[in-house]
Image (cartoon, rainbow, N blue to C red; front, side, top):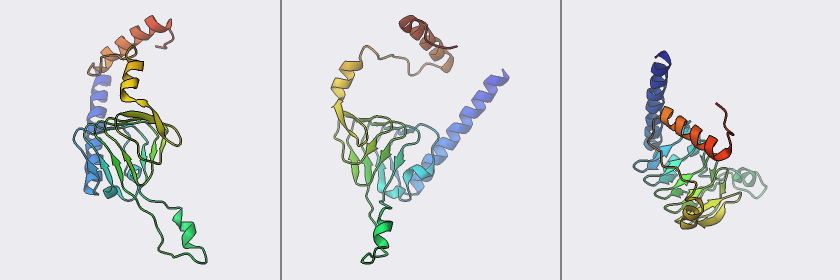
Length: 187
């Protein structure tokens, strides 16, 4: 009973912190659509120093430790050259479309647009535009397949249980992987 109360308290606290973080980013000018999910922890640092140059479409999920970089600080070198100008800088906007998923630890560089219905794999470096309806990954990020090809390839892997409570999900997954992988799951 005490553990359940503690878990509920932490979930409420996390939800409150989560909403405060999104509100803080929006107050700084980030354009964040409806039903956007950030997988915690959320930090203002992920939005660089110019959150007002970032737009994220509706129904998009941003996994943890995704970094949005809206400037090229390497211009600091140019500023200090004999023929350099101390005011030199490069900025660029970032736009993530609707219904996208950006995998954990991805870095998105300035002047990049990611199309609608696009999946970006974990640990990618997105340094160019990525079209709609594709799966892309890598360093540098490149298109791997279309969204239709991804669905076809993984249809046998799909599980339909997103809304299950934690304990039911745990039970379901434990049984599923014991049955399908010969018991390679720890309790």
